[in-house]
Length: 207
Image (cartoon, rainbow, N blue to C red; front, side, top):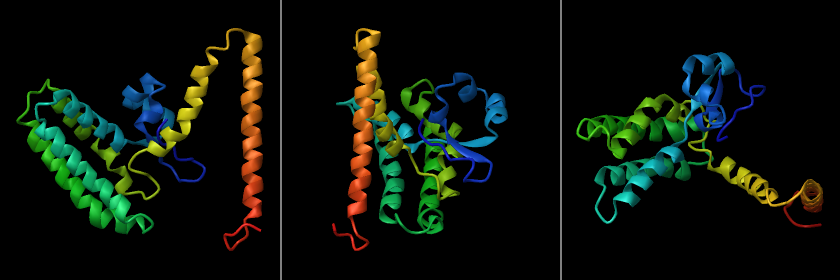
């Protein structure tokens, strides 16, 4: 799951990332079922789109991949806006600065698509971007939505890694011991973190 907005906090329609639905193929690919089940709007991840162009450029090397290269540079401009203006209002960060760049990028995607072999990987990446453009640019209208969900992916990576490690337990008894050990470590870590937080005074120094 890449991005999920709590429906109790944010008024409907709820914003969800497309990657949040990858666990359910029928929802991810059937708009009618998706609308009925979620009554919300999909927010697509810019990092997911960017990876497609990175892959195209890498596989083309040492030959150049000019469309993929320029796409990456244009996407980088959008990320630069987020980085430079982080902490300011969503309207200032996105409406005034990112929206013109996004509009220009969409026009560029459309123009380049007309001159590419339609079965090429680059054309597929461009069609993906245009097909999900509303979801990709949803963050421009709602400051609560991030451009990507990399932070969530990083947070979930240890959970996935632990699940893979648990496959080597060998038997149910060892798996139970493994679960107890991991849970104990996580609980101890949470207690240590809370205790450390209490030792810090409001001035930011340890008491």
